[in-house]
Image 1: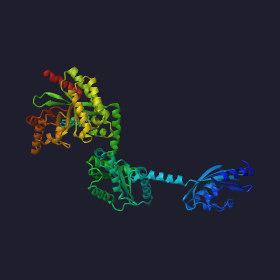
Image 2: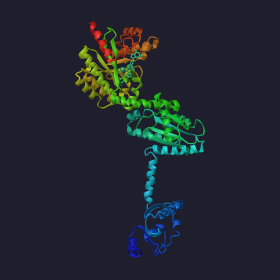
Image 3: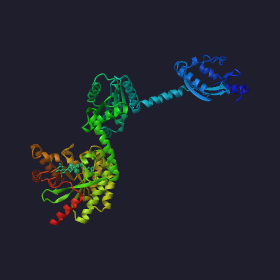
Image 4: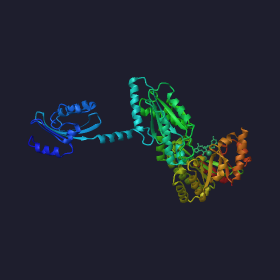
Length: 563
Ligand code: C2E
Ligand code: CA
Ligand code: CA
């Protein structure tokens, strides 16, 4: 780059350019600036030489940053640089990019600079940042920003040493069910209305955030009393007594499960605190929802234990570390084997088995149950075929199917295909389901079950008497067998009203043409009583505990010897 002799070129650039352009040659004192440059900075023609007043044009708050930057550039003899700052009253943003040339002693010889008005870009950026803070649907803070803010407040508390910060994690009970019932559009509307309700508590010290679809959190900074966040919960709960009113939709009643954690007990950063509130919330869910609980140390221990167990379970699913036990079911009148129920155990080691009650709920929650369930079907059928071919077995095989499994689109296809490939008669296979399969998607469930029944499979309704059990809907669902829950059997002899109900249930169910199985029969008295009441089949420790496939083989062989 020459000196002086390029003046013509610079004149050309500055006259023709729509850009803010300014060139200075410190050796010759030659300065030229474009009209646009003068316009941006409000400088009169002929005054472009004067650099002394320039700093005053930079917006007050940005001056220090500007000076620091320029000094650093000159100190390091940087050639190309770019600075952003505001000018005037701070409303206009400038991008200032320059190229400097220094002599061999490091003294600035000449520079030329471009200036852009980037105000509209900056506004867009601020809007984007706004969007980065807020949940677009509901207008409450999004997860990231909620956490960022909370972390800042916790830091303040740590430095100040006196603040109390509380977090309440909130989850709408049965939201998926509500969504399925009213449709997702109305479901979305509900969430917006719910968020609005939460925003009523918003204040400089109360912040609302959304964590996922139907999960929200409230942070209370500098809480004064012990129970301030509890007051919010109680108030919210009262408000939720009135239904949400959505156009063209019946009233929606909402309940929530909530967990509360307090700094510093619950954690020294936002993530920990929220996690603890979440764990407390999860405790409420487990114990029947629609309530609140405050985080305690013991919850964390249990939670961590669960996390460990879940990891182990996932590995077990990979390796298929399970075994099936089988519990015999007998015809009540002739004491003959009706069939067996397959009951899974998790084989933790050679001599340690974990019962399904301790891992099936977890497997249902994390989806593992689908793989586990397929393994159960295959293993049960393999054993069934083995017993039939090699031991003359002619009983049924009952298999427990989880609601999650039944919901899988290809469930019936996989079952039918496997039964076919093994040449097993579908009528020898009984699928045990619980009433929970009818809670979501009633029609689809009916379809799947009807389809299987048409193929010849038997459908059994398990645990009758525990859930929503109403006799009136039994006639509307495609089932063959009803299993009377152990809870009935346990008390029918000691509690007269349970006795009467059990008797009535058996009579009604038989009238509907369904077969009955009583489960959890532990004593001779229970067995005799059920027999007298004409219950068809008996299953329970009294007649036989769940046992390995080998023991079943021995049992079948013994029975066959008798005949
Ligand atoms: P369930 O289907 O109601 O199975 C009966 C449970 O009662 C079994 O517990 C059985 O061992 C137990 N039981 C049977 N007779 C008696 C008795 O006389 N007294 C007492 N106290 N208990 C008795 P288990 O094997 O621990 O299974 C628990 C639950 O786990 C099952 O309840 C079922 O819901 C689930 N489950 C078991 N295997 C599977 C499976 O392969 N898939 C799925 N999805 N669930 C399974
Ligand atoms: Ca069962
Ligand atoms: Ca049962």
